[in-house]
Length: 278
Length: 278
Image (cartoon, rainbow over all chains, first blue to last red; front, side):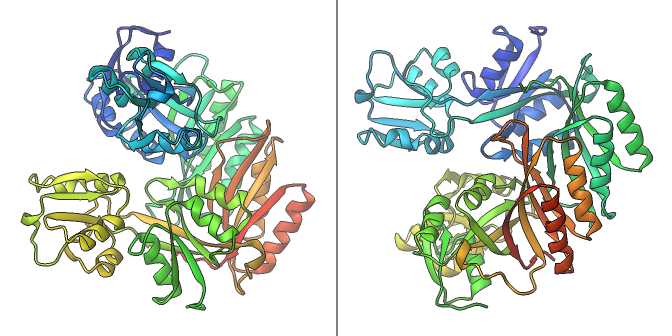
């Protein structure tokens, strides 16, 4: 639990999955700033309207959210933490109703898709696409909409005082999203005892160079937890990779950096932080 | 140009970007089967209602479309070709109208987002989310909708005889999508002269194993054009990667496979095909 006076920008509204992460990491009394998009969130950090941002970075089903990696990279933000949230969709409505009372369910197209199999048992329910998961929960509460259901996380039911009619209704149960905590470069106090690092490597197209780089990392006992080549190559014959590494000894990590520097490898540190994956 | 009698399943309707790829690769007279989703497309191939499928695999902005990789992998389809299409959004409407006549523009949320900056110059135009890019073009034609614009590719304007009011209106110009051509495993006649391969590797968490594998590939002159670790690890301590490789000599490739086999590396060939990237 950190300083609760900090202003934390999240993508989406209170009750959203990003909000759930903010509460989990920073406690219940955090000053949340709701942002309509990831771009707006990053802007608020750069302009110092927010101290900290929370943004989704990858998903166990869809993979990396590269535009968010790009936002972090281009705006020189630092990743100062991470959090893994199992995405568990709940069907919710105004209290006192049963699933038979629900005539329509509104949610984000992705959430509807993920829960399609569940609703095959309830052909009387019409599925309607909406902009967001949590905002439908808010609408139901504010407009007192009877017969309407939302699909969103537990936090949305809590926050908007809705009743959960069915839990964990997504078809693929193992849907985990990795969120990261970002700050301005100069404000990011590297945490003591960090054991994970996110790097961007730019490699010239020299034969076997990636194998050599990974070899150096392995020799220094760094454990690769993620690697992804970038689909766009800005300069011809240059390749860029996003890499996450885990290590037990900080010395192994700093030695790796100095060996790679001598090899003339261009490295950008996107963040040094504490591993949160179990 | 291939046999034009083949039935080709595409995601979306005629006029869509997938259709544009089908026309480019197989010529104008192909028997197109329109599919509402990637899952439906794969089903049509497995059930032999279609001979060939075309599906988007990655995008230069958003990165890999991992669910489609997963569809290919799980259903044991073979990639038999690839095609790179620059996504160039056009604003189109019924002929005879100017941009001042357009009151609303409907398109897929992603297309609207990509063209948002363009529409800031036209505050009289309302942007409305729709299911798809090309289907709006079809609606405009079929219902003779005046004052309504669609954002879609050139093929949609051609197919539905709409007039292009503004070209290349997306903010990021370098938006290239990589499509692949897939077939049932047993029907995929590996093309003569293939020089590219897509592999799925499953590696045990043995120290430095990825570095060793890449080293073998590099020693045999294989050029890595893509690498991506999978976010979900089915078995603990096992890692999976999608890798694309280019080579000049087929012997280099087959020798690599046999060396890796001796190293007890689990390799699945997702496809052997001709490189289409320039």
